[in-house]
Amino acid sequence: MALVVQKYGGTSVGTTDKIRNVAKRVARTYDEGNDVVVIVSAMAGETNKLVALSQEMCEFPSEREYDVLVSTGEQVTIALLSMCLQSMGYKAKSYLGHQIPVKTDNASARARIKEIGDENIREDLKNGSIVVVAGFQGIDDEGNITTLGRGGSDTSAVAVAAGLKADVCEIYTDVDGVYTTDPRIVSNASKIEKISYEEMLEMASLGAKVLQIRSVEFAKKYNVVIHVRSSFNDNPGTLVMKEDAEMETVLVSGVTCNKDEAKISVLRIPDHPGIAADIFSPLTEANITVDMIIQNVSHEGFTDLTFTVPKGDLKKALKLVEETAGNIGASGVTSDDKVAKVSIIGVGMRSHCGVASKMFAALSAEGVNIQMISTSEIKVSCVIEDKYTELAVRVLHDVFELGSQGE
Image 1 (cartoon, helix red, strand yellow):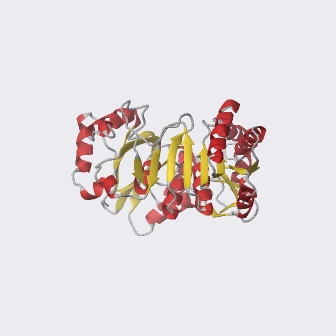
Image 2 (tube, rainbow, N blue to C red):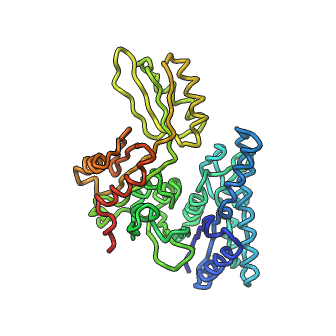
Image 3 (cartoon, one colour):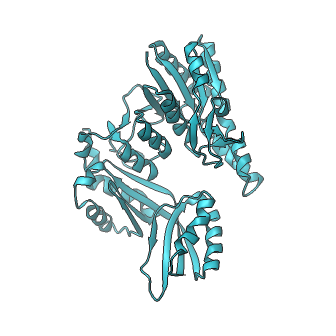
């Protein structure tokens, strides 16, 4: 008997008919002799509706009340799935995050999991129940409901799998695996059979929507094998796992893009120690993630600083940065939300040279101007004008011959 954790995303539970299909798949796994824990998201579109309601009420809602509101979507789904399983003759019990409990820090809307309680789940599994858990949510030390950020149900699933020492964590979604790039952009994108935690971390952080980055961080830390699969067919998916020698033979594994980026530039900053900390500390305190950073060489005691933030945080970030710029004597602040980031990823880059220059040459040949560049051991990212995003992805996918993988 294996312990299987399954997670179903919003598109997989988007209607009552789809929930019935999920129940059948869960029941089949249970009937094969496995203990089953199911983590579900809210029905497709529900969280967006809740977010829109909060914004109708006020421009900057209380983060505590925001979490109370947006966490309600999963409560509907766990109840419906448990009802369906019970109607099919199975013992099933639903849990909200605080009932497990999923203990988190107090960073509302971006909470991080500190501990997963396993006593309640193990008792129910021992009694033959299928356990259905609300993803995306938890509880802090003061008893407040918290949420883990968009896509947080993936993190819930991997954390529960790690806490229970599950044999496998199956992430079911509307695609049947991780692809070399978005198939909606490149028609001959190939499904990747297996990918390392490091590559998946980069792909998740750089725009791939299949898995949330923190779920991969959890999986890597606790060595949880993730199987990304479709909830609409029985095809084998993509295994996210520890790196092996075979993975290193592939120079580039994938191309990603992210249009959810905005660029902020602080102009003519007095160049002396502590200025960068002055600029970024208020952003950190506001839980705004800063991604790429470029600082120009100092001229006559002044420098320019450019960085990117999530587009949804641009308004809040600009307000904070403009206040800081005034305090430190910078000449001004500019912003641009018409940018995108395109990236190539592959553990094979560690042992091969010339990858970055090949990328730059391919973009240049298509007239795509590069505004910012960031690199790591296994990735190269470029910020470009957003209207060239799809073109850049197709060109890079072709130049690194990713469409032929797996054929």
